[in-house]
Length: 167
Image (cartoon, rainbow, N blue to C red):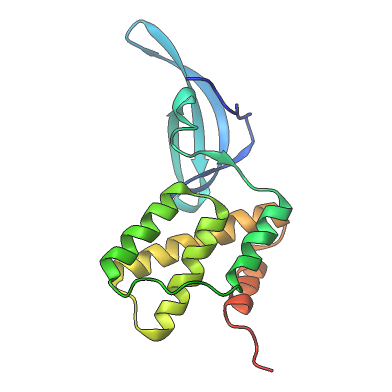
């Protein structure tokens, strides 16, 4: 498998459904008769260090953090109109879980938007609430890095776009 994009030590990356992490090192581990290179990624939000084989990173959806422009587009998406989501929570949950696993910042923003508005209609089931909380945290973490703003500032921006002031 070809490496689409090689990451560097100290580079910030997004591991879908895990969070934003930093490549701490690239090490070689012996497996059978071969030496396999691994990324050692530290995910601050969960205080977890994970090792991912370099040739599997792309397949797992690990990607660099988005540009400032892409982060702004994701935040703008939150205030846009959207198609209603299924009322069957299991179908909705699976649909949003699939989006979360894909891991693009726009997908994550659309999960936040739809579940936030759904929670205003009816309280979310526990699994969906956890999914919403995870998506919100991922969005805030990545946008704060891309826009070089505090997590509190980004969270304020998210909620001001979810709840635009009435005129």
